[in-house]
Length: 135
Image (tube, rainbow, N blue to C red):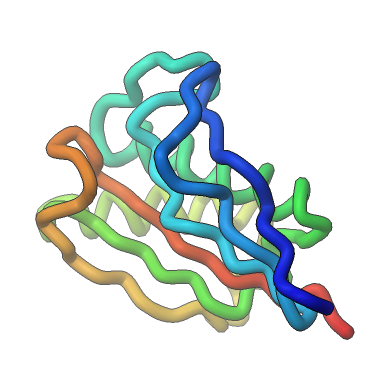
């Protein structure tokens, strides 16, 4: 399978300056996905709200590309503030327990990185994911 772009990334009616990602070789590679605004363009304030928006967005983008959340083989999570770590993990794990329990129990995903200079000052959470579709 040759590389195929997944198309533009829209949050509400706003087209982002980066794309959704690409699919190639049986994998889906999502770009860094954030939750600064919800699907209607409304701001998501705080790490808990942004975590939920981000996870739901990743879930939808993977589904659009033919993958499930539990197909994730790499899950890079970026937080802007180390003080948000515990709340982020609590919200993430509750979401995974409901939507991807196998992935949660396997803990087969990887990195949680503190990266204070995310794309905008409002951004608290960003996730980059790779999912395996199979051959």
